[in-house]
Length: 302
Image (cartoon, rainbow, N blue to C red; front, side, top):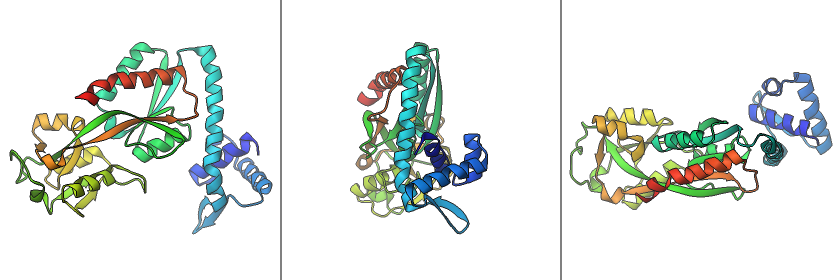
């Protein structure tokens, strides 16, 4: 098994298509097919199978994939370590972040980092919490910012702040303007929340546990992927939501969203920075990690 075969296997696993994998690798499709064939012969078991005309990983391919991604990530780490010796404080830094965390605090992080490291180009990729963990795990980003700790033992999850959550509604909602709202008054309300990313802990599971603790069991929840779409639906009185306070500042100032004071639902959710436990952190990555810690001191303590 050589690096070309591993790279080819991972490209096909990610694209689920030989032609697209060939384009990603800048190789011909026959060359890609040949490498996978050689790897399959070496292992003595198929790595892919077709079902309903769709290419998918076999059981063996699924078992191999995380190890293959780890090998590629380690190879990138080695190259980055060597390049850092020559370039110093320059090059590129890849970050992954949950879209709703791209707020004023994150903007301040970028501003400070660019001032301290003007020679580093920063690439940012967004996703949900589960996706951010996977992006970092496979080495496509050095650092990730997500909600809640990643349960994988191969990642370090460091809590850097607690995001305050508030219940919001439309100005036209019957409870808007009340000084205090009891959970019983929210019975039967439709909630708008982020779509779950799988079996791992996500915001929607957090919401369910928070509501259950306040006596609101089995609420009606409409799942929406976009924070902007969630806010627009709440503004239209389609439902109510439990949202990060930092993400609704413009709307509450404009009066298009109203906060509900629900003492039983006062909550916060941990924001964590994640990076690979045994991965290499370049000088730029260590610098951004330090910037995260500095910028999050105030939000964490308020």
